[in-house]
Amino acid sequence: MILFFSGTGNSLQVAERLASLLDERLLNMECVGIPQLKDDEPLGIVFPVYAWGLPRLVKSFLKNINVGERYVWCVMTCGDDMGYADKVLQKALSRKLDAAFSVQMPNTYVCLPGFDVDSDELAASKRQKTMDRLAGIAEVIGNRSVCRELTRGGMAWCKTYLLRPLFNAFLVTDKYFKTSDACSQCGLCAKSCPMHDIVLQDGRVVWKHQDCTGCLRCYHKCPKRAVDWGKYTRGKGQKR
Ligand SMILES: Cc1cc2nc3c(=O)[nH]c(=O)nc-3n(C[C@H](O)[C@H](O)[C@H](O)COP(=O)(O)O)c2cc1C
Image 1: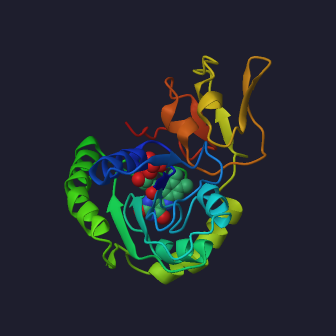
Image 2: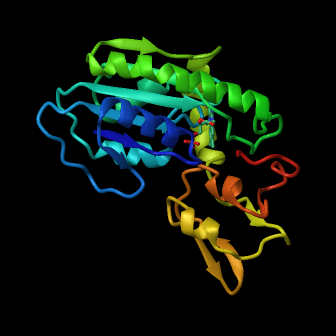
């Protein structure tokens, strides 16, 4: 079984390819309850790295699973580097991973100055390199080998254990989302929010301030490019 979460499609693409290479069933953490695992069935977990750690949704989903002694592997997609996200995952699972990989995919984080989506060329080259790597990754997993292929990046410890808590406390929030006059109230943001945190109310898009996992799907998927996160996303691109 492969459990996955994908904010904007990168991790979905990786999870789908791995499911087909490994002939495994694929379950979306966004819309399933706690899955029943068969005895000794290997478990794969695919998700995007957020702030050198796990998306809130992934963390709370996995907290409720008892994975036992089975073979457990993960593939983390990231724009650049993943810090110690594998250790954060191990803590959530209360056990060691047998195999862990990080793969680069187009960047989706745009909410702070200096962060924007990748150019089309860079996005395409990251995607291609990763898709080319997946057959090798699937072979390692298929053989149930123990393996680590991780791009931790510089200052990895500081990023995961000092910056991540601050990021999660102050920057994973729907408080700053708003729509511009370009919004046509099509409702796509509300329909697609994984946390059901957006509603259309009196002809306006309203973020409920209940639960936001910070995936930016509402920002990237808006067909009118009408969603902004404060002033920091003005003029920035959407992931294609
Ligand atoms: C809130 C947030 C935080 C992110 N943090 C990181 C990070 O720490 N390191 C990194 O390389 N990429 C980071 N990214 C980029 C994503 O991990 C990357 O683009 C990922 O492939 C997105 O996958 P998805 O399309 O399945 O959501 C972040 C993206 C978001 C939205």
